[in-house]
Each structure stands twice: as structure tokens, then as C-alpha cells.
Length: 139
Image 1: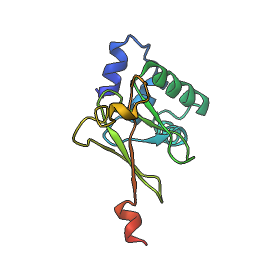
Image 2: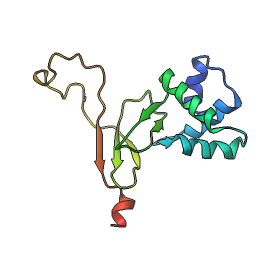
Image 3: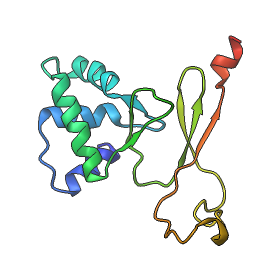
Image 4: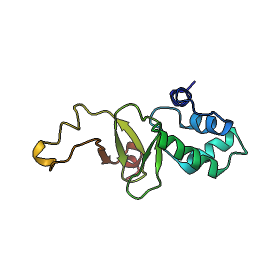
């Protein structure tokens, strides 16, 4: 069973066939699919699943905190099931490929008190940008 399925079951989330398929499609490392990509993959496993069901299921998973919605540079939102392992993202500026990265250090501690302007910091999102090897090879 996938990590995401286990987490959802642990929360007592009612596991319909449609929800199971969406969770299975999202399973794996470095998974950052758009809702349309999730739907396309889900249809191969459960042909009757609708696009609306996929969007609603993804929204529920985000609300539960089991999936992270990732938005980069005006592109379609992507869904990251790696919600419980602290990480940042590395994004290709050409094709939009996203990889999870785990830089050394604590990004919360990297912002000096003098730059916090009285804010209580609750979350940090760092996005590294560059060109992936595939795009660099075609340049």
C-alpha cells in the first residue's frame, strides 16, 4: 500500500474506488502532476472517473494536508503527495519539471531576526530555479 493511501486511511477517510485511484496515481517520489495529468492516468485504471471527481478529490486531499498544491510561474497547479517530509522544490524554467530537494540547514533559521519585521514565521517555501538536463541538452 502506498504511503499516501496509508495516511488517508489513518485519517479515517472513506476510500471509494475513485479516491483510491487518485491516491495511487499520486504515489511515488518526485510526483508533481497537474489535475489533468492525474485524470489522464486515473482513466487508464478506472475509465468512468470524471475530471470533476479528480479535481474534487485533489481539493479534499489538499484540505486534509495530505497533498501540497504547488504553483510555479503561472503554470497549472501541480499536486505533491510528499506533504509530510520537509522539502523544497527545484523547477526547470523551460519545461516546468519539478524535483523535490532537501537542502542542508534550516530555512526557518536562515532569515535573521532583523529581516523578520516582527513576523512570527510559520512556514518557508523556497523554490530553486534552473534548467533541467533534458532541456539543457536541447539548447
